[in-house]
Length: 76
Length: 254
Image (cartoon, rainbow over all chains, first blue to last red; front, side, top):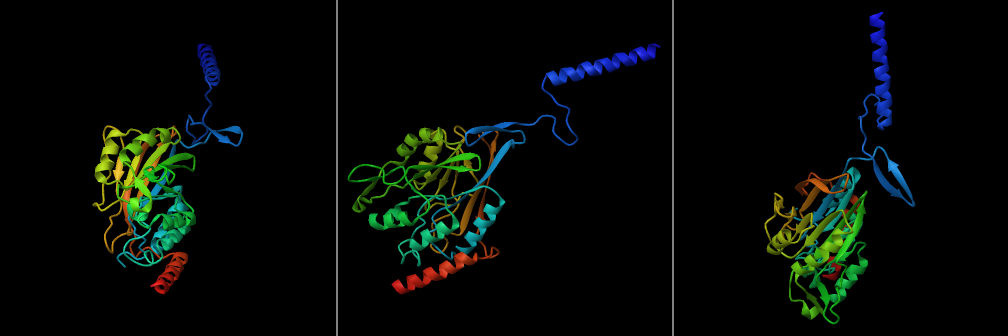
């Protein structure tokens, strides 16, 4: 009897914890997904779009030359 | 040149790139560039998809009329914040470009080395003052600020130390290449030079910055390397054909 009462208390605590997490804006994470996702707002024409899977970083390459003198065949 | 085109195509296939030149790349001491007064150089740069070029003093020495012709042929802007028309005192070229690369706004400012080109009807003003004057304005429009500089290493280092708001200075001129980046600890500005103006040597190298920005689009990391256009890189067929075409043009002019 005591064992059954403790089980109900544990289940009740889990339900309360779940409600609390939902109220805090957290979602249970699916397998393989990060617990929190970065979000970023971007403009698409006139409408603002929230991209939940936006990257946390941007990478770009700056390729540059200088003093090429218009050479077509430097050093063979 | 044909290897350079192959390298650019490969880089473009792998991600977002900005293709820049820090000046003195129209003419030198060889044909077809000299015989065609830089027309061959512009053709190659157009076909490779250059985004901007800084104006160097040797470019100015082509003369106002010829350089204006080259400028009208170019599908990318000539940049200089310190070349003014003698008659009016107005800037001849656009001082900077703001280009969106993916989601990142990159601001590129060009400055020219001081040289007496008064015979061409233009004047080169102080590159340090020009940079200090334009960078705050450019910083407000761009996530990343790059200075394409012909001003020389001493001026570049002074700019790096005294003008805040610049991410990278890409330099040119008759100086040793910088195989390591030089970062000013006060401003965070990074200075490099990929190639060196030397007979038989010019145009052999690409400088390649891989830049990482955070979600707030502020620079958080960079890696830089000098890439040599060695024979292992195959010729691009289109540019190889154009090289032959321009060689024939130069031969006929000669």
